[in-house]
Length: 140
Image 1: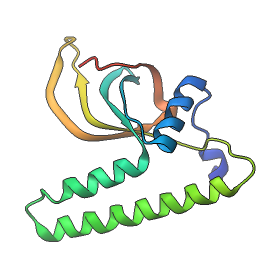
Image 2: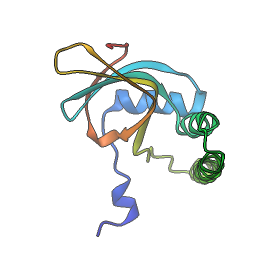
Image 3: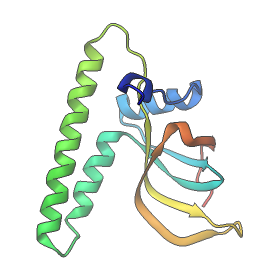
C-alpha cells in the first residue's frame, strides 16, 4: 500500500498547476475543457473550498431535509479539514503543490457524436493525474 505522500503525486504539467494555484490562492474561475480518459468535460475551474461550498449550497435544494442536513454537515467538515491542511501547508517552507483533484462547476460532457450531452452536472471532481489534455474555453 502506498503511503500518503506517494498518493499525493498529481501532475507535472506546469501550466495546469499554475492555474490550479491561481484558482486556489486567488479565487479566480476559468472556463476549461478537459480530456479525461477519452471523455471530454467542460466547466468552470474552481478551487476545492468553492467546490465544497457549492455542494453545501446545492444540498439545500434536496427535498429530504435530513439528507440535506447530513450533506451540509459532511461537506462543512471536509471544507474545514481542507482549510486546516492548506494552512499547515502554507506554514511550511517547502510549498510544493500537493493538489490531487480538480474541481469544476457547471460541468457538461461532450457526447461521442461531438455534441454536448443533455445531461449537465453542477459540480464535478476528478483526479488531476487523470487529465490527458485541456484547453481554456468551454467546448460544450
